[in-house]
Image 1 (spheres, rainbow, N blue to C red):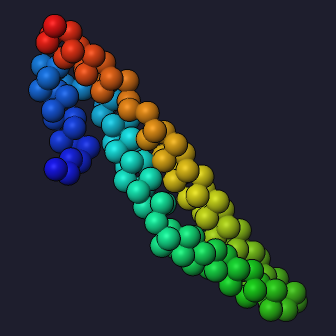
Image 2: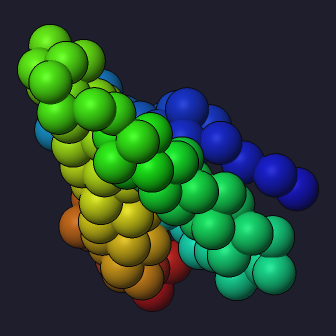
Image 3: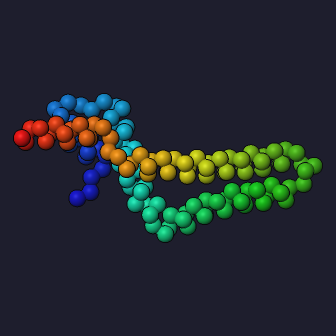
Length: 122
């Protein structure tokens, strides 16, 4: 059965008999998304997607290089485009890696709830 973050939050709230904090809900959402990303980055298509994103950065730099320096406004605009494209790619890869890494351990609220349920079954 496939669960989404809202399902997990709902079940935890049911077990705990209380609403989870926004902090815990956000942690579960990021953890769940990280688990889904972990599956995605393990596929051959992931590298294809990263390569495609990288080509946008390269193309923007190539266009900048072709621009005659006497057109300073166009050069500046091209630099901005290249800078932003490169920065977005870097941030995107860092965020994906961070989310995947953080998904390796369940949020504390999940662990706490599981532990509290074990105590009830003794």
